[in-house]
Amino acid sequence: MIEILSAHVSLDTPAAAPGFAVCRIFGDVDIESRSDLRDAFARAVARATTGVLVDCTHLAFADSTLLNALVQLRRATRARHLSLALIAPPRQLRHLLDLTGTAGLLPAHVTLTEALAATAGLPGGP
View (cartoon, helix red, strand yellow):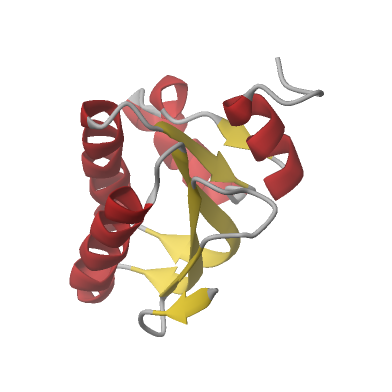
């Protein structure tokens, strides 16, 4: 069931991936979308029993607002023993993660299938 939370974020629990919450981010993320991100990530953590995936396929731009939200999300998922991964982070976001030294904290995958395999221990995972 896909739940549209705002113009910037939707939340999904795919039938093929029980236990996972998938946050999809759209467009530009900056200070104006801060509360949308916080709410979406909090809902994802509350809903997930296995892990949270952040789908950046449709992300056009992100500043430190997204970086901060992702670091907070990592803390929340770790506190609940949930996995966390990014899907298709654009070059600009990968660069921001590299510059701040947070790339190693937020594993990134090209597709949802790859992320699920890596985080759920399915065939094809590391």
